[in-house]
Image 1 (cartoon, helix red, strand yellow):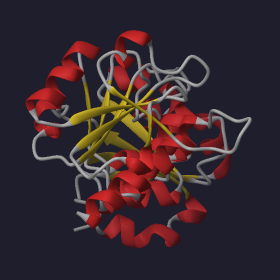
Image 2 (tube, rainbow, N blue to C red):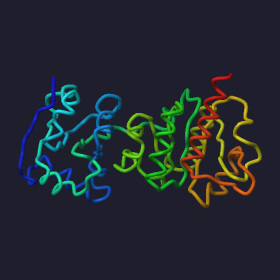
Image 3 (cartoon, one colour):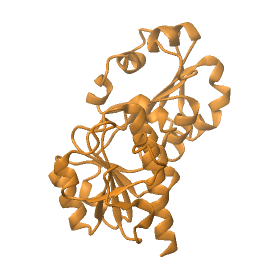
Image 4 (cartoon, one colour):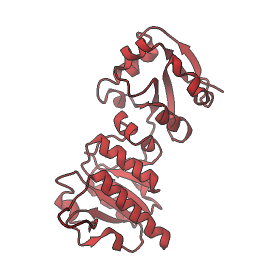
Length: 267
């Protein structure tokens, strides 16, 4: 078992078309695919994720470094090997460092299935910044969250920048998109998971909560969670020094996840 090596010196090779298309935002997503860029992320995709690999695109000098990755893939997965000038012409940016892969999104996870039996979830409302979403997924993986729920307006965790910032955690931490905030609260209620709204106006501090299954609700930086969400959740804040009342949402998620998972371990 090993990926099929396909050397080519032409940027017009049909197998490279999806990589060319990824310059256009969301085009790949509409085709049921996503792009993993960089050796670290591609290794996560191949070895630890639930997603199938459609193909790889490698700069020819990088083949030796990822030969174990190639060996772990089925023979029907092509690995297109190209010189640097073709890679530059096809992809148009250098963050990948010569290693990219296409993954198949597959069937989405149902929100109710994700919540069933969970003890710590993250729930995102209106988060449209890929850096923040990627960082939150990385924190979710680091602290052992069971998954991430997203409302309709939050950005795609499988957008390539979100995956890259997450260091591949977006490929490992399960997530589900709710059709509405109402569905999000319904899913949590049915799973007996308490919604916890992180807000500077919280009545309690995150470290004072007793252990229980919880979903940590996070909103956009600046406005935070909308009032109609705050009204339906337990309002909790992160204790800070005088004169400061807010943190970057990704930083806040890390602190809150640490406290939530630590409380469960003490139970």
